[in-house]
Length: 557
Image (cartoon, rainbow, N blue to C red; front, side, top):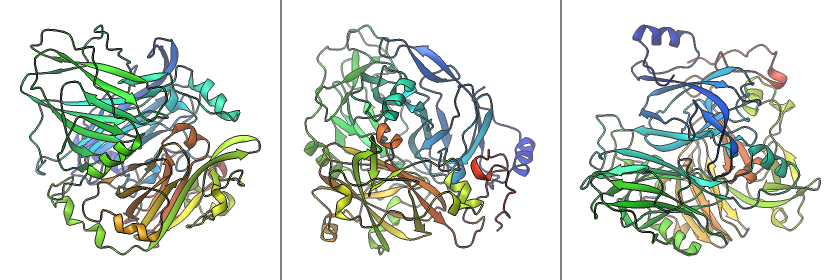
């Protein structure tokens, strides 16, 4: 169980037995997970949850830039299973993305090893099960990547490095929730909020989740791992200094509270400089009629006395949240995973080669609720998209580019026609593209892109036109992987499609993702070379129409 470092000889033999090309000088981390059901009561009601090695949340994967991570997953559930690694870019290696568009799931009673490198990355991320509606049963955990020793970090080493996975939660089982969606209904309102699998009530009865030594500074990595709602978090009686968001060092401004939208992560520094006693970490839902909240107790080691029952309040409305987004800035002089400063990449001086507008909407198909991108609601085929493409049978599984870069006005009209099909967009390798995420609905949206970090250059009210590029932040926008879009608003992101593979753009609202609000970008290198993309792993499970097909000629250098 747990993490093991193999001998040099064993690692060498392992490299010979796999098609995955890695840097032999980079260390290996090995984990073994037994995934099973268990009964616990996060909100006071016993329910079935997914445990990893008996834990909920699951164990922390903690590595260093360029480490090679190996996770051997034993599926003891009664359904096929996959895990995805939210924020890990999987350079040249979408085979390890762990989605139904890239991989065949692990059958019950079997195991499979995910092998990936956190290449040129640092930061705060998390993993979760991506199959069925397993995410609603837990199975998630933290994944953190620290800088190599030779790379300077723009703040002093903290006394301790804590992780907080906070999110809304349903007391119904994932099976019951899935039946709701399959029958054409929504999940409805969540029942509560969890902080690291617990829901403190600020009644002074909870054991401390974190401890702090007076005068010391602590790093808290906070992720919104929920299913439906944005969160606001704050530390009672303390300010926090923002230092990192999803792999980017930020300008170090002080905040009383921070909004985290679904799928987002941030690191803050908190100094224990107040009266020694207990305090609360508070997380509560945003933009909801009924506010759900939870607390976790933080105890000063020399403290005497309980935390005050008066909790700090969250802000109101999304205008405040938008203004806070505008305050976030990339630290141009700090080094992240590489020695060169982040600001040495001048993204604002690159010519845009393609603009893709994404418009989300909801509607009905065959009398059931579906969520839609540009008139198309994605359906996962039996054969994963990436495998179909690699084996040369894509034309038997899906069609490319069934949505337009500029959607017609009727895709957002009431009762518009909905196409149910795999949604795959061809993206040219190494182009610099602009994606506009336009939200005509009345609820906050949140979008995650696999395989890349993008520059979140703008979020603004109204509808987007080319003239709105004047408001873009073309100097120090945060490079990240998840962005929110407020009601009746738009967001603009920019990125270079330099990572070959099949990459998912998805709503992080679980019911929307499950009912079709996602697509895949197919980014193919014209050279079909190992310099650009790895071959399918030798031990990759095969399914669908490629199950019994001979493997194609492998890529070479």
